[in-house]
Length: 314
Image 1 (cartoon, rainbow, N blue to C red):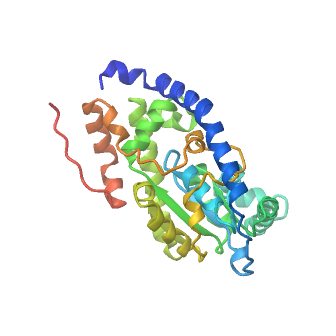
Image 2: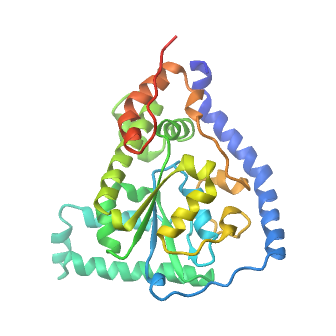
Image 3: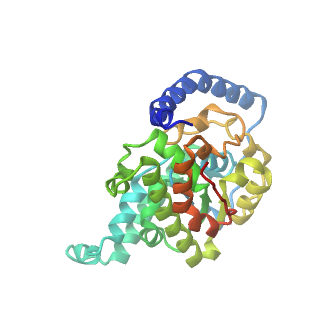
């Protein structure tokens, strides 16, 4: 791709997304409604022990968290809404350096405050799950990746994590093309350089933190790669649900046959009925920029089991 065309990618990408939403979302919704009439809904079976174990999806923006949440939400026992956002703010509060002093000023310890907040979160999320006719709740809010220790302190040791990681070059391409003025990228843009490289720095920082967190909590976490989810969805999702000790339900593969709560998520996932193999988006970028991106994300990608790549600039 020429540098000139690369510069127009943000506006082109937004126009394509808007057109796809207008055309495909009604079709996908109509198909789902028809299938729900034809297929009887599974009755959610209660499991008192598992019903008390929340599920948190971890993954940076544009890593497939919206797709994964729709798969989880398609299970008869799990309610996983779009991004709730409040977990991020509460987790950040518990990571604030003077949080202990702040709570002490009103006669609380941080542990007591966290337990109170945990009860409030559990009540809110259980209410949502009950409205969906399901006993177990899950959440996916990519912003929590910036406050993982605060999140774990907030939710306590019972929570189970499902983490998803995607090719850092593809994530950077997606964010750089569609969200160059996104506020979470601003610190990386302020450091200087191309928006794609800023997105690459964001990806590295978030996923290095994720890798370290998973290393600290291997018994409570499961990691999958986006590339495996879209190319081997059944095997990949069977492993996910096994890690959560939930029975396998083939219906989760038809993730948009189910009615999902609307809200904040990647809109693209609401316009498809299948797992789309859209790997390799970074190949749209000029090759010199690909080389720079790979140098930036290489070490982290190798850490997550991605193969090495070599580039030669012609």
